[in-house]
Length: 117
Image 1: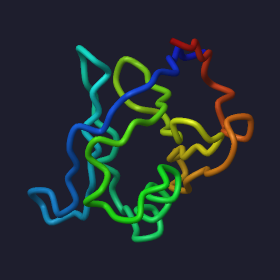
Image 2: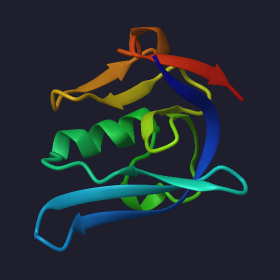
Image 3: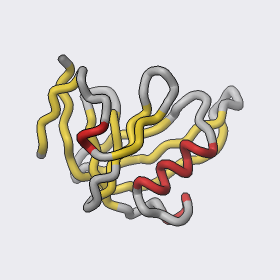
Image 4: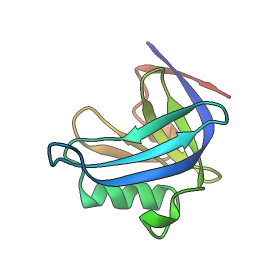
């Protein structure tokens, strides 16, 4: 079982564009208050996925994301899921290329032991 932490973060900055090889990608650069981590960089990201990020965080546009507070579930090497800071709305990219969006209880976290901070 993988260990993960559920913790608040703030979006410091974002990236939406193409990486070096022309692959569409996005990043949310997260600040945990002394440390940081990125969420995104997904290969094959779709417009629907970007809209799911906005919907999860109750943002009307990508440009409004910097400064937004959110919940995260993270491991030592990646952000597993992001969630709204006050609502029980979460988004979790999965290994099969689909994205799980719903309540915390509905996320496919069977492989994780999640500790809250």
